[in-house]
Image 1 (cartoon, rainbow, N blue to C red):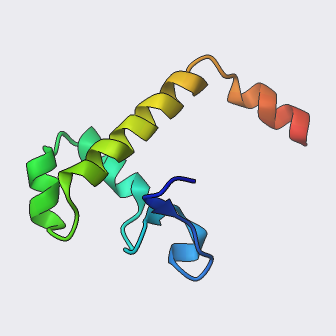
Image 2 (cartoon, rainbow, N blue to C red; image 1 turned 90 degrees about the horizontal axis):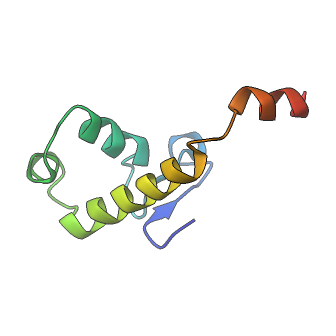
Length: 80
């Protein structure tokens, strides 16, 4: 995936987590969505650093831009 994200079926059922932790990537996105600052996230998770969070935000932004015009219902209907 990337050098900071990993998946392992034995860690949180295989959900993407920050490498070397049990912190789901989705949690960081959720906290940002709740208007947490990077400083507030680091206060809650002091073993992270701002570089990790910034990298996750870049990955999320890129993914969002790439999926913006994707019709998920159309994709799902083709798979059924």
